[in-house]
Image (cartoon, rainbow, N blue to C red; front, top):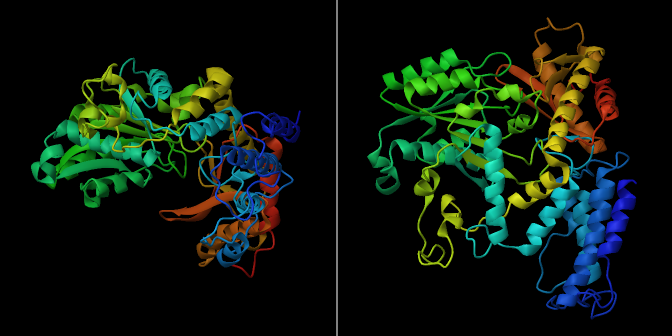
Length: 524
């Protein structure tokens, strides 16, 4: 059964049923008229049912169809006019609002499309999506057991399971609003462990601190240092090898350099799956250095953590059990849906709560009638916290650990297939042999081939990716990212994530790059 027929069946199930839950509109088949307020449950449920049908058709049917565009591109001024974004004194009719839903779907990028390769997320898992719908409908905050009993228990189960995959039989953790926040938590908890007085006395109570991460680590480490008052000058960038992996010998040297400048090292943040090249730092060797210097070892595995599901590829994170903390985003390779991010710790002394708690008495009363350890909200710097565990739990229940492992293994196979096919075609040059599912390459159009020795070659090569990217966006055929990297000029970063794509999609990708770039001459 294809997606369209399946979705039609689902729409029928959720369609308006007279006499059931008040779905049939009390104002007639057209819903509220003349912009009257939508205060009646029956009207609201009728509108929701109709809007759901639009979402099924436009986002989940058309949005996953290779014959449809990945995006319907319009420049900002034109798009603003098409959407009619202005807010007015009066409300709009049911018919007008449904058109707004259609417009939003039509002009948004279809990240579920098989040819969306632009970010570190893509594709759709329908069980996870059902969890996301349910999360939104229940509209609760994950801070106390009394308002989120199901999800407090569910989150604990999820965190325990994920920690066990890391190799930690005990520990702590929390779902965070993004990997950047997880990395900030790691830096904050590491500082608190070293200097707990900082929570009360502030930066006056601590010496100049130094953190260490690789040249290709995520920019959130620098943001965290700035946000926490540690300072960008105190983030020491460790050199990487050609593939983007941290060089342990240089980490040793940078630690000594920091000490020679009067700084106190406190944190090393390694990376498992760098954003651009998909590089995995050598965790065992980094752990040796952290043990020797008594430093907190954090691993940003937001992108690469899901290799732990794969028996074939989890060796890329050998030594992860020696880390103190870990950031991991299941919304990336596992398709849990944005956003789904965990911060995991080996610590079981309640360090996370001690670091972040404010003991708000209106939430965390000490004389509650249930076990107050179930109130997990004080582990977070947030008050209200969105439920992010349900979508992962429901998806995992549906496909099992083996099913998630199969997804990881499949995208590795597709990445290797793409690399092999590139080697058979003229004009495709890898930046490096990929460790992961990031395939980074230059496309060299016919007009530049054989001219590598020319003085303007690098300058012209740097313009190829931006021009091809604009062409594919305006055509709507696919999306893939590009970037420079230190001395390397712009190159494409092809990211393979969704298990719904195939070798045919890989072939299309190569063909389309050639079609869009074969006539490049004047544009360079």
